[in-house]
Image 1: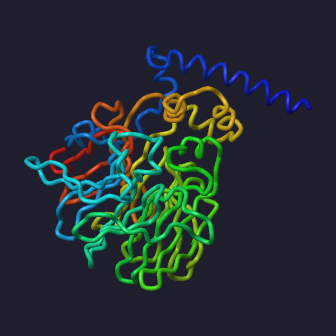
Image 2 (image 1 turned 90 degrees about the vertical axis):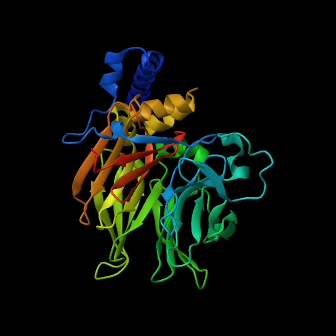
Image 3 (image 1 turned 60 degrees about the vertical axis):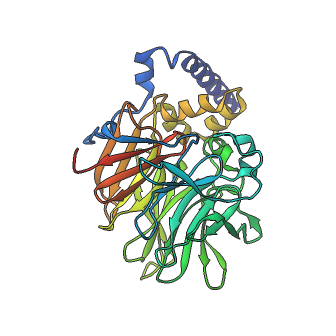
Length: 381
């Protein structure tokens, strides 16, 4: 009984503090800085010098991919379309959609009808065929041909359980195998804050065989399974476990085949993971952990309590990320060592990045919340 009283008292105190912070978080700079995450020691605050390409009439270019000819990039946005960048003159053009039911899909951001319009998240091209594979958060795992158009559904369930939050993928073109994540079996994309705050651990890593169309569950019980990336030698695959702020490694071949371990612990919430031509990995952090983010991850009851309060998505998100928009990209070696950290600590140009795609000395960065893509030129900075 005493223990329960302590929990109730602690919860009351926390709720009171949260209420105060929410009311003044945007006006009191000193208090705001107390709760936001500081710049990472040794990082370069160069991302604020990035170039911006607006995604006109759209929002949330989550993932970035270039086709086998090097054209693009292509990106999926919040209204369910996949767009192709045609250069400064032509801008963005529609390349594909994940459903034909698009009569109502006219707003750039409409969470209430995402399940109708679709929400393409991770995208990857098969370099051999030119097909574009798509992880649509609501409509499952899909593919569209090199000419674009309406995508075809490939997988909507695994082990008799629907894909509730399809998130990202990577392709082993040598074996004809595609690995993809289902972030949660209990929450959909528009409920991602609830998934994190509740301590949900129902995420899965799955494998799709192109020839047999067989789907196998490789890992389950993950805390918000997110981005995936194959190693250069294809012996292991990385999975971003967002709610636990870490990258897991699942061994596909070799003496550790079928086993998993922690590849890297991170100072924030990882989104997509992408390898570069050197076999290194770029990890985009949605945000670093602020003070409340750390408390929430250590005490699941606190997150669940916050979900019961009359707080908006914006307020909950602000608490989790420390109240201040910012951008962080981390490059890891093939062994999980931190090689480089790039930031926009004040969010002057970039914030809440979802992916970092390295191409020809440039870093192309998407964001699930912003209406633009960022380009950081590594040779000029």
